[in-house]
Each structure stands twice: as structure tokens, then as C-alpha cells.
Length: 121
Image 1 (cartoon, rainbow, N blue to C red):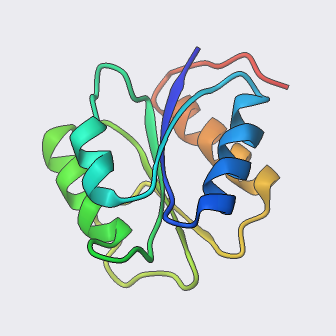
Image 2: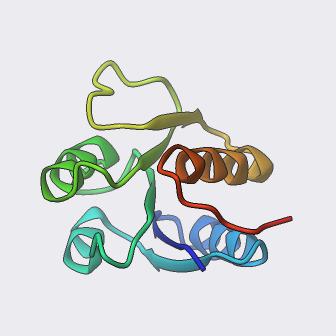
């Protein structure tokens, strides 16, 4: 099983997204802030990071830069209301509001690029 680190500050969105991705066989560690994500992140465990961009203290792009410094090969998918000008630390941007199937497809594509297979569907 592949593990996703999900970072979303809105409780209802985080719970729903975690449930949705888990139903496709992913293990999902979810946290409400970039700071908690950085404390939890382990490149030996987390195959992909999925994050909202807008959070209270540190945004998703700032967090992604730190993730990439720690593990340049870990894919980072950002859900954002608009396409950010700085995408140097991002592997994929999905515009919000995010359709759940588009999110799953994005995760699947990032894992496929990494040569990581996940039997899903």
C-alpha cells in the first residue's frame, strides 16, 4: 500500500478527502497544518504529499519547498484556487474546488511517474 501525507486545515475537507483516498487503498496520514506535516513527514513512509495551499501560518508552497529540500524525489501535489507563479517545488497543481476523482487521478499519475504502482479501482 502507498502512503499519502494529506495537509488540509479545513476539518471537513480533510476528513472527507482522507476517507475518499483510503477507499482506493491508500494509507492516508492527515494533518491540519504545514508545521504538523513537516514534523510527521518521512520520505521512507510517505510516497506523495497532497496539500492545500491556503493555510493559516505556512502555506502549501512554503511547505513544499521544505519537503523538496528533505526529499527531492517525493512528489508534491498542491490544491490551489489559482495557479501559483512559483511552481518550482511542485509536481502537480490541481485547481480548487477540487473534484475528488481529479485528485485521485493526480495522485495515481504522480506515483506512476515515480515508478510506484498502486493497484486501485
